Image (cartoon, rainbow, N blue to C red; front, side):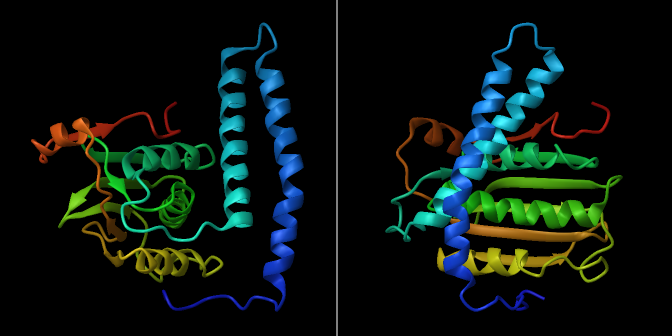
Length: 236
């Protein structure tokens, strides 16, 4: 399943780069219009929250476009520090805007830094979340765990769906892309059936070296676990 990829039309990459270039202006316009609307006096609280989410999504789309246009090369080990926990929280919250199921984020207390560009890492996490949420369906649950395991930054996504190979296939690029990028960064991707019968996908990536005092403090109690609430649309 991980080796399957769609056939891409020859010459598509240069055209895609041109499209990304042309998308910058409309994305900037969406951002500006949402920001202007947010500044209007008397805007209801619910409308403000939705405008803020539109701005976040416009910012994320702008980051994707910039990353696609300039395609930064892999840096040397330790040259990039991205907090996997903070990024996973953002990605889950964004996916829950359009998904009606229940999402749960369980994490070791404190940041988990890895040497992967933040845009690329969020693409990887988003692909795993999208697959899991599609499998779980609008009445299902997706559980995301983040922490350190075997000396690596670790993220696990588990869903309550029917399991691998038992749902309608998507475009066939998600897991393949995550696997490819994990290997390029010295990591790995493992897929299995979860204890409840759904799919379980674990992503391991090299830890970034950091001398942050906060990280040292968290390392004193690696067993501490917190549950991040409020990430589901259900009931809210």
